[in-house]
Picture (tube, protein in one colour):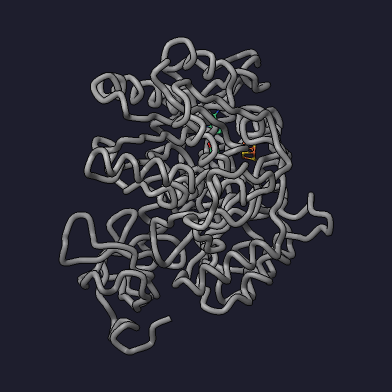
Length: 492
Ligand code: 5AD
Ligand code: SF4
């Protein structure tokens, strides 16, 4: 949702406005004109596809790009059919970069065959100067390159490219700017991500995010609440608040505010039934937040709490600023306040200097916390981060062995942890028709676990009480218990 603007009323022959977001609407109108000309010449509307690599922040940014494309008049299409392909890239691990280069290589012959085709690259990977150098040298067929800080300028950059034959590159090192009220196109009608902050100030020693996403800045709480109110009015009942470290929300505001206080404001928004958030840094997770979670009827019973390592020594080298014991104590506190909470985590294996004993500490944390699921990563050396130049990088074979052991442990525990809900009746927000069986739908519990049960697609976006009949590792097969709310007329 955003302010409705009639692009056809904008005078595209006048000078572009200097203020935002008016300037971007002007360029959207300009692109729309180009789209109309394309349609007249080709007898069809041009098509576009935004492909997302990486995290939920990127997924949300892609929705913004799709919203802008829709305003310009582009029709959505699969990547294979699109006239305009945009890759919203990730660089958190080296293999994310490799994948993008691979995909670009595949696009090259298509671009040669259809010279009108456009290719745009944006996101975290573009914030790395060596990447842009490589693109300039070896991937000349790319049309537009921009970064994480100026995504709001997408329309302007596209218009610039359409008016010239040259590669358009616009990368900012950092920004303190947040442009509100631009269009976006949600993937789901009934749930949405909402950025509450951008950037990261934590500088974990392995992580490239602070370098590519810039300094931490929080959105004005009024703008956040206004966006959520508009989303609720548009049929959204579940929001996912997004930030690299949501627990430090509000510190940079003119009138500082805590994340817990923000949650209390969001909780008041009528029509919002579920509130999720990610990611939480353990060092900043306050008692105030635990209290708010305990008393809330809307905050989902799920907390993603990346531990990264179970070894206090490694945690210090990672600059995580908590010890193993502090992490475990935090988990106990959270579980005491919200007993049925589901905990998930991120773990890195093979950080420089990680010994077998350090790794055993990680396994120990996994066994003690009993996560419902965990994202496990092999340490990836990111140039420019402190860890990249640390001594004692771990050999691949050792890492692989530890990674496999960790994965096995995590999976065994998660399957058992998931099973404890078997036989209970829980509320499910139905998200989609089931991938494997069109007679079934797939929904999500408050604790984020997936459930498949027999039902029709009219249930999508609705809440239903479902009996969790059988746990199959990481998801359930359920059965609608009584009538789903749509049939009771109790539609939220
Ligand atoms: N190598 C491996 N994993 C990493 N992550 C961040 N940087 C790296 C890296 N250099 C992981 C962390 C983080 C998640 C989003 O990605 O676990 O929580
Ligand atoms: Fe990276 Fe650490 Fe910031 Fe997360 S908190 S984005 S791991 S630097």
